[in-house]
Image 1 (cartoon, rainbow, N blue to C red):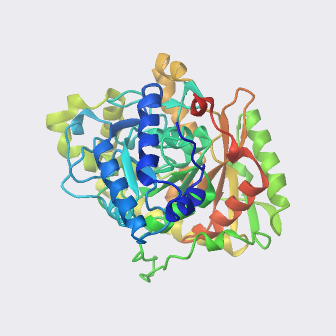
Image 2 (cartoon, rainbow, N blue to C red):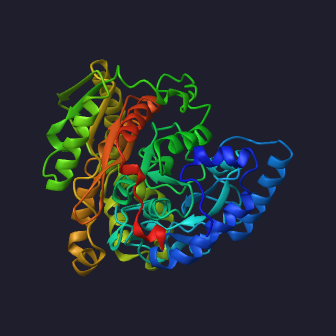
Length: 463
């Protein structure tokens, strides 16, 4: 197969100058998917016809000098709970196995307008209700670094695909860590923007108060490119004012004046020793890149009652006729939400709003927060399948450090910061104030450029 540059930014210039054909590029990635997806199970539906049509259109436009920008002709994937007109969108469930939306989600409209090439719909934990991507009507997702291990979840197929070079990026969703946790487990970059920065319209919900849409990519710069396209220009803050989209790429420079807070209590508790060592090493690098690093304390709320009830509210209409089509563990989790009373839910919503208001005060003294992304490396698939009683507790551990940032609605990214002795990736989480994606990406980029972790590729890429 032809070798292409590893990043969108490098490739975009070659496409713009007609040195690379979008059609040849798309053919290469569809062939890679055909070859590697049987082992990874990262894609549920491969949209070859659509991809070639979009690639041919991109090639024609570029030849005519009508280059749309850095995503023009770039092959990417979509988590299979993001609606695509005329293409089935299943949420990895038998309940929706034949569901074909009539219109595109907002994020898909924005990608199409940018000229992106859509390779297909990617596997996930059923209805995004879990952190392992083991529970799917279409089978479990495998980690490209070691096929015996999970890829994380719920955007497991998206993270695995990006890590295995089955596309240059993907769009995932994140309710408790479902972008950042699989990105950490698969050694790629996963960004959860501020709540409301990217539209969730046309995305099958898990919890409308906590759901976020964001990019998974190979590099921080590539995540910035994708975010630039999918960010909602009319997004409004809590005061109702429109928050304009900055130039994320231009803002990747000058990290030296940043002040970094490290909340050790809770986020550093009970870490796997190899994760702990990698994160401490990363913090030492960060100290050389910023003005100040100091320890702080945060009060953490997981907001699980809110998530549980909102999930039940969405699925209630399907439970009567289709309950036998859900995977048993997914059904158990959904039904757990029906015990919540409306008064309890309204209190949880008010608590969420107050939590989001209060967290803003933290950023009077620091600009960014740094924590481990995931406390433990990716468990084996066999371990969790042979001991089903371990699945939910283990997923809670996997999502422990990411979930609070969904409650707070803060932007947060996971970037690679090391590997275990067994070759499994370790992720570092960087978070910032509401609407502070540019700051988050700035430090993430500075750390990425100061290290080589992002340059490593799993062995499956070379096969």
